[in-house]
Length: 83
Image (tube, rainbow, N blue to C red; front, side, top):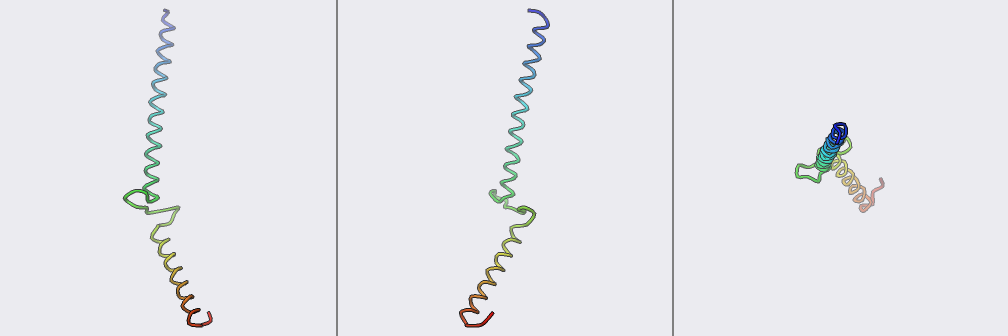
């Protein structure tokens, strides 16, 4: 075997090892980001603090206020009061 062939085979093997290590690191990074996203969306034990720029608590307060307003309207209808 000539020295050029051994050198080329060694370079190719080194490149394959580097590509495999890089692929494994990329998959690990994607798994980490996936876990972080799940934690933000509330699937984790810490809960979600923000969803698309808003907080869960704020959304819940708005929903509760909407429900209270609907109850008031239904009570007014039941009492015969015009809105």
